[in-house]
Image 1 (cartoon, rainbow, N blue to C red):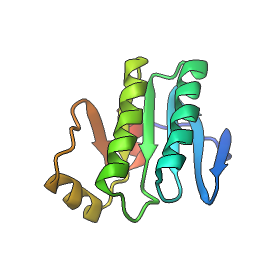
Image 2: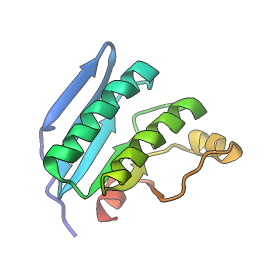
Image 3: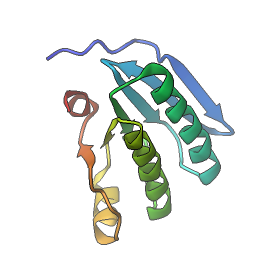
Image 4: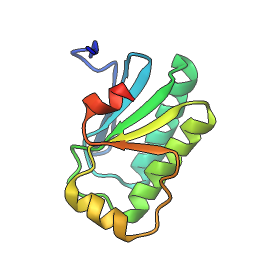
Length: 128
């Protein structure tokens, strides 16, 4: 199955030194996180993602964290909370690109990933 991925993101958001992009691909909102996660950054991300979900009526939200070297438990929990908010609005949630070190760390702590799909690649996430 081929996906029409835009060459340029629809929106690029910057908050201090942190950034993310939002793209709608095949009725899925792809959120690519390009820098470290901080609470203030995640608050801005939450506002933008929920607005896009409402305005674009997408059926899924995909968080691509493949650019991140590390995610701590608190940051990952806040990211999952944003995903849950989108789910309450009727979206399916996918997180893609978790690296081996982060996966090992997250498996060793208690984070509820019920109803959160995890994929290795963005291409896999787009097929969900």
